[in-house]
Length: 554
Ligand code: GLU
Image 1 (cartoon, helix red, strand yellow):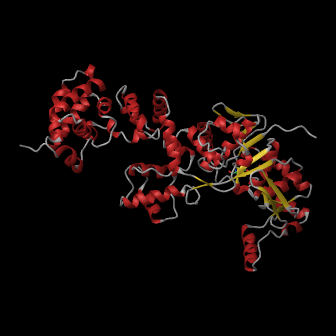
Image 2 (spheres, protein in one colour):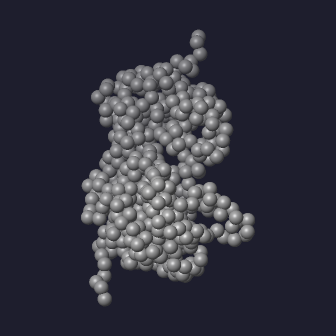
Image 3 (cartoon, helix red, strand yellow):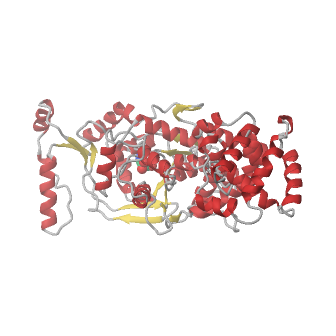
């Protein structure tokens, strides 16, 4: 018996956009399994579909994986990860190897050239449909002589290479789904090299898994039936058979696929309810916006959709890893939650870290059926993790988030104000993003703070004394506080003393008008924190402006 091979798992994304949570979950399980077995985890970029691939997408994938804490032993070099003896790790750079292996198949009679045009194949497909039979390639090209093939190739006729299927039942043994037999005749002579000279996914994946010494192929269920093709190719090429495990898809709670279309749907609803006929300023160009509005099947590209959503202050549903990052989810929470979407350690354990996942992951405990992604639960996991953080850690992580996504916000805050604002927001916040989007007042120009009529009526103009009366009385008191004493404790003592005398000790009666004057709204961190996130001069300006706005001229 041969010695057991070192476990090698791989994640092999096609860089056609951003890293979807489903892909991230595949990567996480492959990584954890390799770590558990003391093996290697490799990353391979499947960019043989030139139309769908882009360099920036693959860089995005790498950054997303790093952010999640998923490191790779072999693969594209990126921030300390990658390299390795079995590269290159971009399929588009491995054409010589594929051609060599294709040649072997042709020489052994297991593959052949075919030159039908797309139209010819289409006609054959239509005919089969009309006759009520399933289309299978009819092997017409097999009747071409060697010389005919050579002369077509020499004349530059565009052709593909097909695998000559042995026509036998194939039984797939799957560690997650169990076994299934794909009957002979279901698989026809599929294309293994396209007319553009690139191998198809089926061929490249089989060659690479062999040459990269992959022992375990853990991937999405959508590839389950492809496995039969891969096994036939492995046999024809004399390769080893990896162990297979196909993981359930992740879907929305209503069972629909979690896809980028969900974003578009929500954005359309928001645009409709805002009655927009033109794009918000500095978002997309009007022509793009109009043609998107007029065609339900069109989608704005992600960056444009994000701009429009931000202008409308709506949050698009997160689908890709970088969406969750932007929304302020913690990578460790995302990993925990993704692992739970499809796997469970049992004993009602739900919260765990990656070390636990590495220790406990068992392929036969991965579920067979689709996993439903419960956003409400994810948010509560995130909120719990944030509230369990040490204050200092929270401040550091919130700042790092701000540096990525809210640089202007940070620039506009006064020195030291960020720490105060973060500390005051920590307990009430569910994501790292929340403090930035709910505290605009902290970075707004003093002149831009306005109070709407309804709020003014409720908070400033009703009761006896009115909120406005309190504000007027507070001006000299606040003005009398020395800059050196502009801190929550001192301000509390001053305002409390005032409230005791003028509002029967009801601090809310005084705090709320002050909050409205400072922020324009009725929700903000505790009032003494709100006061000190702002400088004394900002506070005085805002309070005076508010008084002025609601004091009728004599
Ligand atoms: N490139 C394929 C995908 O992104 C990978 C399939 C596989 O893991 O074999 O779906």
